[in-house]
Structures are given as structure tokens and as C-alpha cells.
Image (tube, rainbow, N blue to C red; front, side):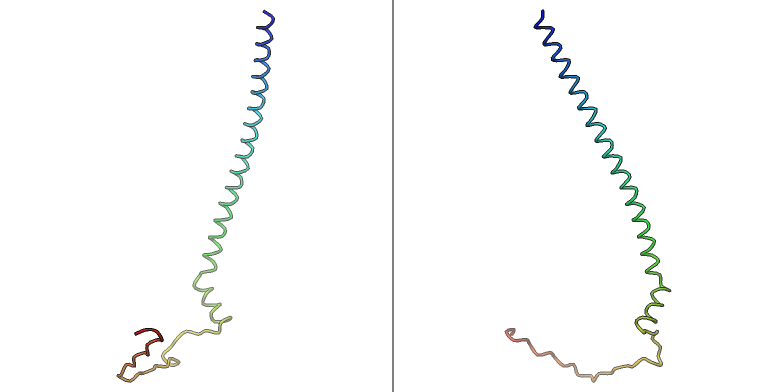
Length: 100
């Protein structure tokens, strides 16, 4: 009878330690999941903000302003357009070395 009681006590202690370990792992995993969710929300907010900034950077008025101020570009007009005319003959390019 004493052996049976000791075996049952040992089984009870093992199951109690296992239960404590499982609860600890469960809490640890829940905290990891909570951190991952908060990071996902923060990354979604950053993504939305970057999309808004990209749209603002690509606005036609801003591109036009940068082209005229920083790149000294101006709109094309017939007054400043130069037309190049070629003669009717088309010149063939010389073949490269090693090619037939």
C-alpha cells in the first residue's frame, strides 16, 4: 500500500510540475503574440503614412515645381523647339567585328 501511495504522490508531483510549466509557456507565448500584434499595428500605420507621403511626393504640381527650379526645365513650345531633318537616304550601320 505504501508503494502505491508513493507512486501516486510521485505522479501527482510530476503532473503538478508539468501543469506549472505549461501555464508558464502559455503566458510567454501570449506575451509574444501580443507584442507581435502591436508591432503589426505599428507597421500598418507606418505603411499608410508612407503611402500618403509617396502620393504627396508624386503630385504633378510638386514634380512641375522641382523640374522648373532644381533642374531648370521648362515646358516645350513651338518657339523653342528645334526640328532636325534627315536626307532621304538611310545609312546602314557598319557590322561589328566578329559578326558576319
